Length: 361
Ligand code: SAM
Image (cartoon, rainbow, N blue to C red; front, side, top):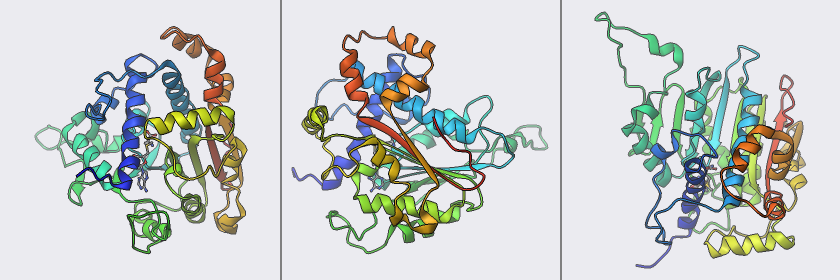
């Protein structure tokens, strides 16, 4: 028909994130045996090229972003207490982080890991998970794996349930939850006409999966630009209000209105990846302040927050040996351009709760 649903562009963004990851993996920047199981390059997406290779700047950015977020996860999940932790990944797309964490020799002490995305995206992910033993065998907590039947063979209770027309997966440890994360009171959304707030949606669908007493991390990696600022604010507020110990991590672009940012914005637009509206968080500091915004209310507000650009992650967080290793993978002659690009991507975090360590990078 030629009609393009306004949400299609948003849904396709996962393809961009995943194809960047696939490129970085195929060139040796990242090691991730799960990505190819969860993501098949979309060969019909228009450019006609079956190659997944992205330019060096993108590969390096993908590497730094992954290490930056992994480092924050590790700081929070490291096992210095017996208390298990919970993770909620918002707009998870084809993210592989759950499998990368749980396939480690010493997996972190996580009691629940929830991934949320549009049903359109979760149905594909659920199908791929169902088809892959390598993926769905990590759904049981390690202690539950040692059950033996009287015959001596391992009993195999179904490790997970698929429901809601194939768009949802539940296991003890992992849930894939189909939801539209925009509260529907939005004026910009042409597709949603109900008046349910995100807080009502989360209370009904997400809260029953989680224990409000446990330290809980939520991740919004390239998600919030696809919704209105007040909608993302409501999400941050809900986590603050419902979990006395909470960590939020936000990753997105920042500073698109400065000179080089405008170039980057045009570049995104030319790939149909323009982000809607004007830029509400134009500096790294303003990204960090999202967690300390008085609008979050006395219960929703976080105690501390911080931020680093990907350039700072490169300079201050990533091991020098790792930087040397990846410097041999591709030729990059313009370090100045790399700096300009990496300065426009930020990882911000907020921490609340008495027993929470500050999460500085
Ligand atoms: N977080 C993943 C990553 O970094 O690899 C995927 C990022 S992708 C750029 C954005 C994801 O957010 C997509 O999978 C998209 O479907 C999802 N998303 C955007 N708006 C959403 C909404 N209103 N409700 C649920 N998911 C949404």
